[in-house]
Image (cartoon, rainbow, N blue to C red; front, side):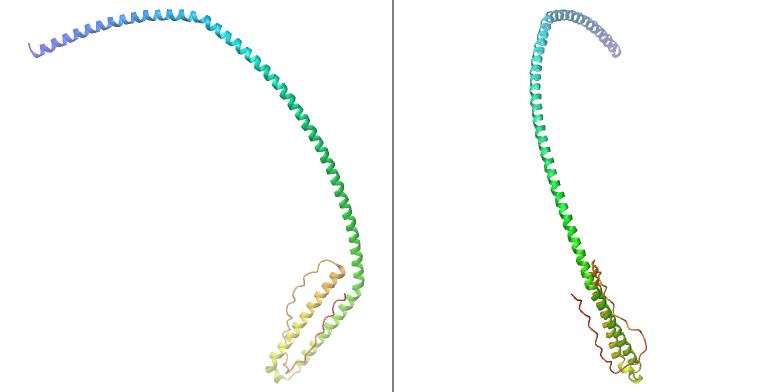
Length: 262
């Protein structure tokens, strides 16, 4: 037997075995399905019988549970309503008590506020009366001081004006004297003359500043109000003019300002 014939023989035998195995497997499967159907029918019948046997006890147990639950719920609701009524009564009583206390407190506060308001109004009236009296006295005193010091202030201002005129005349005399000095001495004494004249101008500026400050102080005493701050007077500058120098400049006594009468 050749190799090819051997292969064909093996294939035929394998196919025959496969077909026989398939037939046997199909028969076994049919038997299994038949047994499964039979067992399923038996199980369903038994289960149905068991369920029918348990329906009545379960229905009875469920009915008993529902009745017991309803009874317990009614008891609980009754207790809850009783507690609620009791709590509502207690809350109402407490609220009424608190309202009464609050009303009493508000009444007391209103009374205290009214008393305090009357006291404050009385104090305001007393302060207004005292202020009016003080203001009238101050105005009367200010008028008396004004009437007393106004003539003195006028005389003092006139005296100061006279002193200023005298000082200006002295300054003019110094200038005239410097103008007639010998031309030959001009170069040697120019610095001395310049310093002397500058000093005189500074004294004049200081004198004017003192005059303004005293006038402002007197105006404050007479007319009242704030004393305006007097600006510092800058040093008086002498006019730039050509003057002959002098050997010696006569000294000048600046009149001292009078003190303010008190």
